[in-house]
Image 1 (cartoon, rainbow, N blue to C red):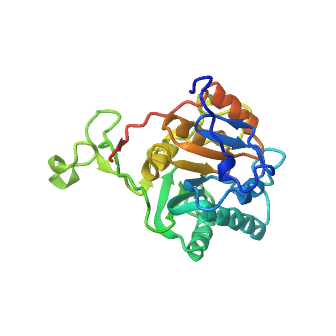
Image 2: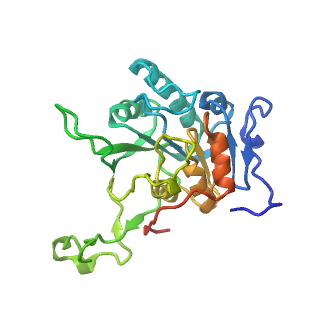
Image 3: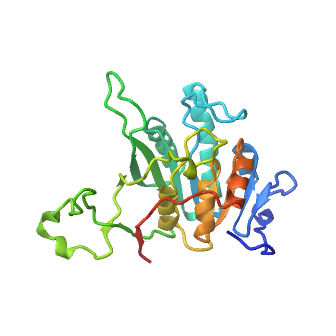
Length: 287
């Protein structure tokens, strides 16, 4: 992934006091902190990040590590979320983008909070994924929410096109596009705000064997990074999880700052061994 002897990413210029927090691992592109995000985030200087992506615990009582409580009261969980969301907004550059991945239950409230912080709503992206059994008395939950806000007009927004959908059995195109198929862009269809092609991460070749919690597909992070950043831009992820964001940034030549409270050593191992496998992605990026 990187060559021995390359100059490592120096995170000190982005910190208020480098004596208070220090990364446990660096590459030429990024640096990883093994700590609570609310210890590290307040030490990062204002308005230096181009894109922030956050995939926090969902407060569902899942097993993470010994430092994570995933079964708090609703009020406690939301207060905690508002704290780190506020820090992410502070750290974003004017024109920077913020992506927040969570359950619709939480994102509807956190989206309202982002609006009170002066952020501009751009999209509620539905990540189509049936992750549970039907619930009595309710519709079957079949999507996660990815909020997309920006700090004013985005500095970077790149159009993404996806391939024309075909039947996996016969290979024929699924839609006729109202008889205007010939008028479609040869590079594909403009990306919609419903993403039904993000694969679940179930196979061990795509996730850490030492971390039982769900991991995100590289395809989701591919889109976030390509849509909102250019090569050399800086991406922040305060909940590193399995390290997917950082692997994508390494592969796409983006700088990154990462934080992970429980599984930072596992992320280091995966990055050093180039263990994080990429899902197939046929997206076409314009610009």
